[in-house]
Length: 255
Ligand SMILES: Nc1ncnc2c1ncn2[C@@H]1O[C@H](COP(=O)(O)OP(=O)(O)O)[C@@H](O)[C@H]1O
Ligand SMILES: [Mg+2]
Image (tube, rainbow, N blue to C red):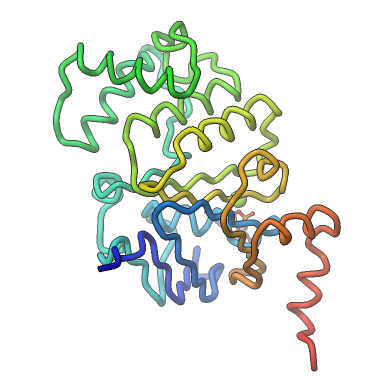
């Protein structure tokens, strides 16, 4: 019997401060696949990520989100994490005095509900760091305190490796990640990708998709997914930008 698809978003409408931003999003991310969500700035990509995270400012007015058949929108954010949903930008900006090690141990506890014995935890971290080709010295550093963009991304990917989510949603926020940070994300995702993990990468630029080859690509314009395809869609966007899609959406063929 087929497993239920991991994440199923159906006719999702979301408003922020009374203004409708998402206007009927349909998207399915099955386990084992990497999907990229692209789109021009302001199209609603981050709104979708925040809604999936359960941010209180984002009001769902219509539609539903199922995670392995369960209504995700009924769950509190921490329950979503416990069900195996990882949101890359849940990473805190700076917690002076909390080491990365302690932060990771706390976040593992909050997801599994159990405190892992310290030795077992250290071994697990070592194993994941080896998988991600990370250097140990990084581990005792304070959470994000003085981390470069690339190091923050490395910490985030390490957190993801430890938590072993069933689905990871990564909003790259288009905040001008430098090439090192991009490579870190891409290498991490490629190391972790596999039959038990679904990944949704949200990005404005096609750049990161030079390093992570998604199985499916979706383009969001004005709160809806208007095109879905594969690598050829990424290439078309790289060559031609978003304007042609926007104008096709505004004046559909045959009209
Ligand atoms: N927290 C918020 N408060 C007010 N407006 C918001 C908020 N989040 C998103 N918006 C608005 O929603 C629209 C979509 O934004 P966003 O989801 O960030 O797009 P994208 O990530 O595709 O660039 C924008 O017009 C933005 O101004
Ligand atoms: Mg965004």
